[in-house]
Image (cartoon, rainbow, N blue to C red; front, side, top):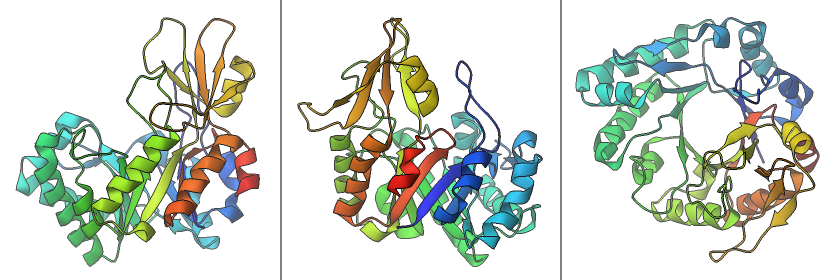
Length: 316
């Protein structure tokens, strides 16, 4: 099993800070086969890819490519849309799509950490009205990246039908080299706060992807390495936090299994202030590994290391 690791290049977060991924990466470097540094660039409305200074100029990102190469890891930086509006602007213009593709190839072949082995595309927030244009963009990017001997990986959140997003899994399966299937961010509010990625839903997402013709070996299961906390009376989604922060905040969590649609296999705890906390740890990870094995998927991606339960690595 090949382990892919999404890597935060800087600390992030508001109420609860996430560390960068450098400490976890260095501690477990021999178990990782692919790295996805979150610093490839953010798509602007002029088809350029904005470079975030703190994510590229610090010692960790500056040294990562050489370190990954020395350990035989694929180096696949991730890129994303700066905003939904910017992505729509590019998709509405075939000439801007071409310019964005050209600029991305230039980045991957000339930036300080070039050459990359490939690119992870993380385009989020589009409604189904943009399905055709996004699919055309994927097809164009695949042609340009492959011509430059670069792999094309695509991340998309799991879904169980053709609605909810512009991601056409049939197209992704036909043009991408790898589909990183995000089984977190579940959007149903049972119970509140809704869990990160109930097991029954994650399995339905795999079933749907396979009906679209994506081979199981091309799918990598992308699992959340963070926990989710909702203060009493707060917003539905709540705050993302690390496993350590969650355990300091919450009491002893209980595994939740029963649900009308199937088993959840996530832990739920309450805090002294009356809030709720969904916890992902090594115990819940076992059930995600079962999905990987039951479906014969191509590997597992961890988003993002540095926030995980340390016991994850002993399971791997």
